[in-house]
Length: 182
Image 1 (tube, helix red, strand yellow):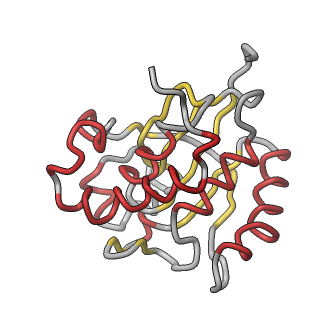
Image 2 (cartoon, rainbow, N blue to C red; image 1 turned 60 degrees about the horizontal axis):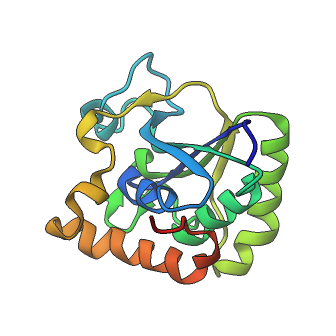
């Protein structure tokens, strides 16, 4: 393990879904749900859900690239959400639910463009619509959003019908990248 952590900022619909997956990835140290990519100086759940801020629901993943590479992070991301539907993930509709990769440097941009062009089309039959844009700022989500799936899980029907299948897909296809159980 290296001492150098990297960041990946990803929007794949509801941040509860994306967070639930990346919390289980080996080498991930933290996952922060939040809002990014909009034109407002601040963001909160109510205003982002209104669709007027242009922010997306995102997670910021802090990870050790010597354990799980940025490329692997993106392969997991592109496999576990639907990157073919603009401004939508299932029943969640609006610009805040768009598929987006906010890159932190030119190396991440190049990897994201390559994964979008070469990897994702092998997973999905429809054209990939994921936006790739420079990261500017993260506005952390309200506290009750953090670790939502691990706190609420199957007690919420949304989790049962939307998040659990995505987590199951991750566990099946990326079992080799799961954190060891302690």
